[in-house]
Image (cartoon, rainbow, N blue to C red; front, side):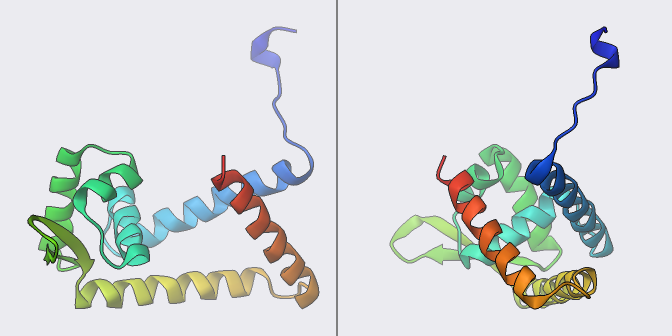
Length: 147
């Protein structure tokens, strides 16, 4: 058998979680497009929302992009009315990126859409099984994040 004929198929938990991750990513890309955002703009908006305030340098690190890329990205999100720059209280040379009022509205809308989509997706699954799944996913996430 040559390598071109090889099949790489995950079984068990990995075989279930990878398609789930792909489905969630496709949903995320649709949500970004629905709000007129690119994938990286969407990720940046969520990163700012999760931290409430973040320096451009930290945002660049979190997203795995250069500081220069963050300048253009944040400029676009500010121009779209989704982010704002705020002075850093402890360092006059630094600033924070925060959600604007419109950014908060957009995040609420996206979270509502995500909650609705997932609520429909889990209809018919026993609540006890969902709680067990949720606990297992949190544990796996913590383990992966610790590496």
